[in-house]
Image (cartoon, rainbow, N blue to C red; front, side):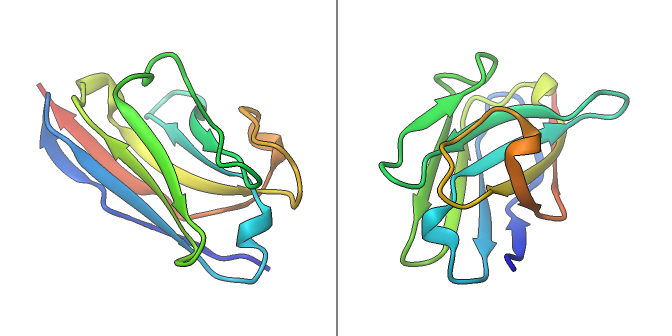
Length: 125
C-alpha cells in the first residue's frame, strides 16, 4: 500500500515559479517510477513528467519541457516538480502517481497504481 500526499500548489502570476512535493508512505517507493499528471476543468487528465525508479531518468510532455523539472529523493520518499516560467495554460489540479513496482516510467495513466489527492495550481495572466 502506498499513500501519496501532494503539497506546494497555489496562485501565482505568469512567469513565476512553484515547487510541488509529493510525499509517499510505504517501503516500495524506491522501486516505483513516479509521475505527475494534471487535469484542467473540462479537459482530460494529461501527462506532465515522470522519473524512473532505477536510474532516475526523466521524461516530459512537450508543453512543459525546458520549464519543469521532476526529481526524487528516495531517502525522503518524496518526488518533486519544479515549475518555472509558469503560463496560464498550466492552470490545473496536479496529481502525483506511483507506478506498479519495477516498471519503467510511462506517460500512460493506466501504468500508475496509486494517486495522490491533487493540488491546485492557478496561474494568472
